[in-house]
Length: 151
Image (cartoon, rainbow, N blue to C red; front, side):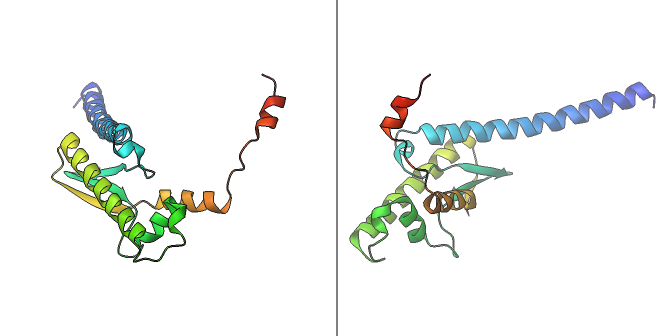
């Protein structure tokens, strides 16, 4: 086989690989944009997102697993829930609201991506960033400081 043919084959395989990666990334970006701009999901404090796709399975971020309680995540999201007991009415309502949002996100992702199923995975990144923000809150900028700034 000549060098030109070998080069052409390598380039064709490389181009196919790049297109395969680009198509997968573009689909994830498109779906995440749809989740973020959804009229109902967009108002919820947690941004549901497609983390990755494994063949025909969508892997979505979740706030709970069998080793991390949903209630802990809800208390991070809603400061008013930090002082209420686990079996309180407000905690149950927050859990129901989360379940509705999760079902909507799953439905939207399956519709947009033609996935056969959805798997939920703990969104470690969200938990880590939220806990960090609570430990080291960014102080609000006072208006008097803003008026002293010149642009």
